Length: 422
Image (cartoon, rainbow, N blue to C red; front, top):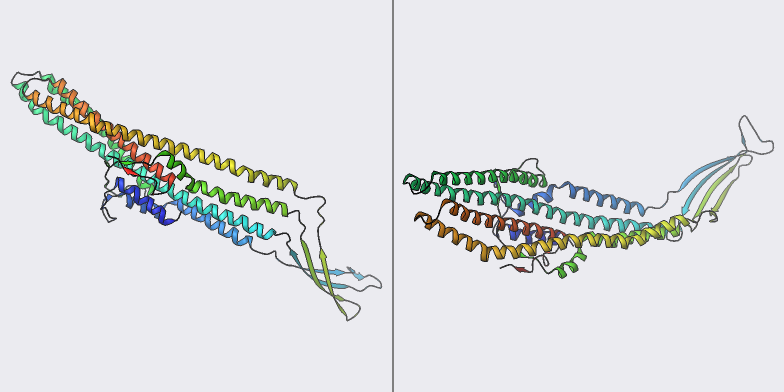
């Protein structure tokens, strides 16, 4: 997975919550593509992931380094304040070099390369998680903004009924309690609206933090909240989860641990230290060349404990990957169920509940003007419409949040939405 595929994922989900024609521009209205771009450019999570990659590059570079040669000096027959009778002082300069045998350096480089690959895949996983988190924050803000609009519409609709009810009261056709009941209903909706305003303020702040600012620098968020997208079948999501960078990195981790195991086994292979020296004899003008080779004898320490530790670490990789996979499948399964259930409820609300509730409200409104219904009946009809619309709103919020979660785990724009819901 590369940067192009990640941005393709971003654009794919942006289509279901942002207008298709929306283009990033300087405005007080924020769109999802703008939020994603800003978050990607300033996120400390990506910065930390970049530094981790840099650290692994440093380890890979260091792993290729050869051991440094050793320069030494020896003085024989030296006695402070005098000399050994019959023996002159001899001075030797030595240059020694450790020669690694058995492929230790290659194993060390392979382990460092596995570290680098794992860090690179971890960064891609972090980027996907960031996009998912920003999308969820954006959806939350957009949902709170839309909820306020729904409540404002219901407040305005009830307030339009108050003059009509007052005229009926003035004419003696209705009790004054009918007006106060409507006013109380408006007050309750206003309380709910204030709660929604608080939720919107919190959602805007969370979104701003994702984009690297302490306070929101946008007036509103803009998106096509009502657009429906159906997720791919769960079986396809299970297959696609294998391409998640969180799982792909275990291949790199296994390669690194296998290289560590090889290094542990090779540690028992003795290395050779070769040396060359120049000796000067004190009692004659002659010099001599000194050659030497030393090899440790692996009889006391064959690194058996280190080999066992490396074996256990390598064998542990498959279990850790299985745990990670189960966790991802659990999350994507819940998100898929949430999205599927939300689509079913939205379909039922739009096909049956909302049309019936709105038709009932229209009938009651018309009949109230003719004196055939009471204020309680009209308030009940309004409440049914409000409940249905808010229920649809909540299901839409759950749908878009679940889709963002799925896309953050799948990381493939070709999988995340196979068909548009009708």
